Length: 408
Image (cartoon, rainbow, N blue to C red; front, top):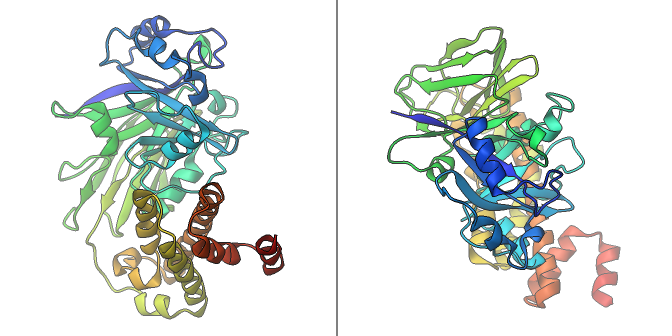
């Protein structure tokens, strides 16, 4: 038996740029007024220095209703870190380290189509994408969401969830959107988030989404499943996706679909400006005739594959921060043609199978390049591993620039 917690995991207080100077006691009143179950206080990380973290969180009376956290705030993107028990980002270096720390619960905030959009590299093992941000969404409903980024992470086989948060900077912002966290008696909210038992909504639409064996959002189901069923209370339009592929669009608030492809099935429901986005149900084990041999022998895909493999060899030579390195390396290795799985191609046309394989290879190359840049910055700061550093630099920058850097 599951319950749904109504949550908002992106809130600012008097220690951030909060217009109304909201304090813990103000949020204690708001949580009751708007019938929320759980809030996360996430001031900008640099605002919580000099004992402010302790001053803020010592005021909390009911720890079951509040999560501690912060918003890592960089010029090239913001990230929510929740469930922390102490302030651990007193320096820029600490903040960057925590952004890459896969033991954190990490949610990329307002990533698409706004002045704070995420311009940093894609990260492995993140937990979610803020697909609905209350402040920017209501300025132009539907445009300022994180759906584009959400689709990209699902394409890259990341088990991520969608989140809807207020990003409250004034009292009038509060209560306009929420994240649904699906829990049972044995599960706390943070564990549910890690299991992707989450959906995002503006509040006017609610969702039921499960397979006929009782699996829910975030679960992995096997090939024997017959149907995935959905009911969206209040929806006028529904779109069903597998990864970044639109499976069907209709104007009903309920339906069922028989999975024919492997991968993440998820739904967007809309009614005017109201919106709901589900975490996927992941289908595995379906088999059928595929275009596997044609895909792995394609000349252009092999060219991309050679480039990715060279980059992975370079990364292998430059192993720092063991967990961080292995997270990236193992993730990117999934997308080489040598590791292409026939499951990825089941029941797809050749054109779709080809385009998805190409997009994954291209994205993996871009991610590898971004990680190389991170490693170069690390070398510049630490002066370690010059030979590997030289290899990385020669691969990223044009030759004439590279020689000038080395000579100087």
